[in-house]
Image (cartoon, rainbow, N blue to C red):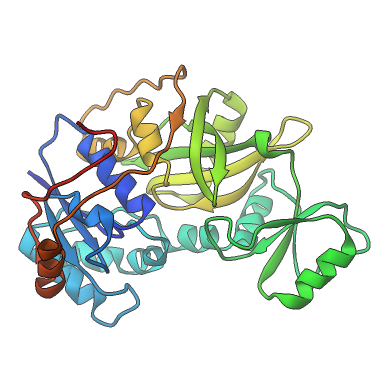
Length: 341
């Protein structure tokens, strides 16, 4: 039995990890799902559920330690962005004290990925292609080429991202907001890709490249494509970052056919279940390579992934019991989905 803790079960990343774990049919996996809220949908999809405080709380590590010990956890997959720095900071001590493998990259990689200006600096300083990027106090609004992309240096789900067509609108936005970067606008929406690569036990996976369509910052339709140029570029950046586990790269192709990364997510992506259903399971690649088990995969390029909303129906007494006791075994939960019989 392999005991795995997945936090952030209420979000898309946590749920995607759990979905992918359930698609590993030849390993005996016990999934422990955790979240801050008893109303987090994904918390009812594991073999046992726990409530945890915010990762910024003083007792967060203590709460995790209780779960590590009581459930004999072997692997801890963080499912939220806000946990990544915490996990990178405490990875070694968690391994030493509880013998739990935290599936996270080093702190430098996490910090670079968390800040889009640091991402630009990393790409530039390591000789990789990149979109021209400026901080608010270094941009010359009279000389840059419009349109440009304006976005928060630290953010997620495309919140605050917008195209600015002239210096008047750029000046207005810079005066009204803080923490922005100004970035070269590359290509069109049709030139945008999200890419997943996994590194585990010094083994590097193939890069699964998805041409995607976004809705409210999330990928809701995706098509796998082959590109040696993109694949080589993404692998090289991942190795330079010294990634451990899965890493997601978002990029566009410029008019000369050159890929340029504009965002890195140093974690399992929200598109992890997309990859799994196309024939490459990032979670399975990680686990089996860490355990020195052969994992053969075959990406099906003749499929398209379409995301849909679904439902989970839980009795109120179960929600109340989880809220009161902070843990519950969900083996008897009634689950209702539109696409299930």
